[in-house]
Amino acid sequence: MNKIEMFNDGMWVIKKQRAYIPQYPFEVLINGESMGMTKLLSFAKRISNTSRFPQVLVIYSSGYLRLKTGADPTPPLPFGQSLVLGPAISGTSTSYPKKTLFFHPQLTRVAIDTSQLNQGGTGKMLIRIISCHANRSPKIGTTNQIMDLTWLLTLEEPHDLATILHVAGTFKFIEDVMPDPLQTKTFESVRLLQISTMFIDNVRHDVNALRSHTENDIVTLYYDSSLANLLLPVTASSLNCAMPIFDSIHTDDVGRPNGNTPSYRIRITSTTGPTTGPFMVRAFFNSSQNLRHDNMGLWVFQQPPASIKKGTIGNINYTVIACVNPAPPS
Image (cartoon, rainbow, N blue to C red):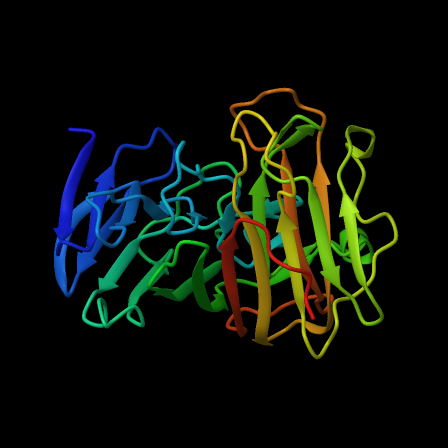
């Protein structure tokens, strides 16, 4: 069976779905009860006064999350970009002496609490996610195998024009790690959070611009095929320390194959741990023409030390707003 319904209260539906990805499945718990294993979990919310249940969130065992608004337009608004739970690091470690990109987690457990839903539009769903390597160490591609990670996601009741997700992440290094010094100089060795999406050309993309609220201005970088294989922005600048916000945006509705996919607004609320200093946002996309695969990455960098000791703990807290097109930060 491709889809297995695990929860349905008339307003929310949570389902296991089939996903053809190499990662292992994770255990799902709903209100403390184990519901078995899956590689993909979907969350759908009913539109008031209708029988329509558009999906607003999906979670993959690879730590990729996809988020979109609560509206159900015609044709339906598809998912576009993915949030990749982190942090991620490029470097070496005790077990990996050759440079490795520890890119995304392998989820082991997702526990869902529905007790605070359906409270007159102000309810929320709590989703606790664990990626722990104590019981298994999957050596799959670029799986993050140097940290134990947990996240508490707070999904607010979606609205037609926006869905808000709060992410509180905690990470603990399970071995000594050395971020790559050359990539540290270019603000890419440490990625506190990541977005994966597609930009191939001006008519085939999920997003087409990055907008940052820097210390002195609001800067918008429109992607173009001529920028492929370059680290962007070419001249890097830090986010405003008092209001670290950036937008990964789709400013048109002509991009194929996905039409007007949702934009993401990210606001970083706090960090603790080994990294310090201002936040830098970096982007890179390759020249691949494969429409089946994301070819673009966007990430937030903060300065790491030359080495990070086993047992070091940190936190990253931020909010993601999925909307049609966020207004510039004010």
